[in-house]
Amino acid sequence: MKKNVFLAVFLYVLLFLVIAPIVFQFFGERQEAVVAYYPFVVFLNGGIAFLIYYFALKGRIFEKHILREKKPFFVYSSCALVSFGILCLSSVIFESASYFFRICGGIQKVIFPSSFLGWINFFFGVFFAAFFEELIYRFYLPRAFREILQKRLTGKKKASEKMFDNQRLSVFCEGLALLLFGLGHIYLGILGFLNALVCGAALRLCMIKTKSLWIPFGIHAVYNFLSFLMAFLLF
Image (cartoon, rainbow, N blue to C red; front, side):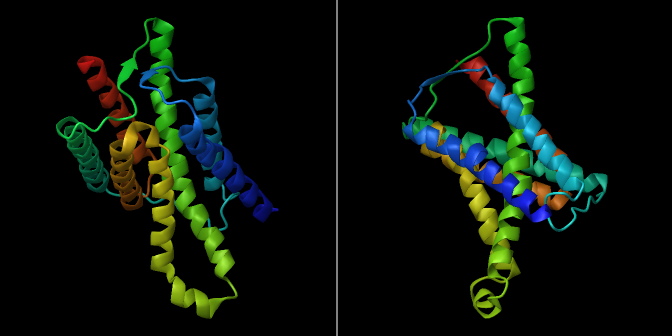
């Protein structure tokens, strides 16, 4: 029963929440302007992500129980500051490269809400979107890929020992999840894709070091707010 639940959740997440949006970006109509308004599906996906997190903590999704470990405040604060600094530095570097080398990104203009309800939608949408990405790409996919590949390699110990030890398998799964996160931002252009890779890696390392979903989620949400603020002030 638990195995069936794991496979059902994995296929749903991979096909509908990860691959489908990537495919839509490649074959959908290119947009140079985007409205800072989050559709209902963003909030729905955020709710689904929270349910995955809840049941994962209850031990109903993954085979191995997820241990929640408290770290000293210094670990949380230092990891948060370093990770946030990497996100900001990466953004500055790639934005500068876009300006000096005249590499156009996918989005040239952001249209902000003109009503109170629109701003409410925008405010909560940033949080839901950040939580969804942290849960799916940093918390869920690396662990899910690892469990699936470990099962596939079971019974093929000689081959698996040559191809993948635990460390190589983990690096492969982390890289695959990171690549999917980058492709999810391909609508921002090649520099946006590269920036997403750097930011995704920094946030994942923060999650590994702090053993917490909430620290990278907070960093991600603040970073997104600042990005929109800069776009609001500049454009």
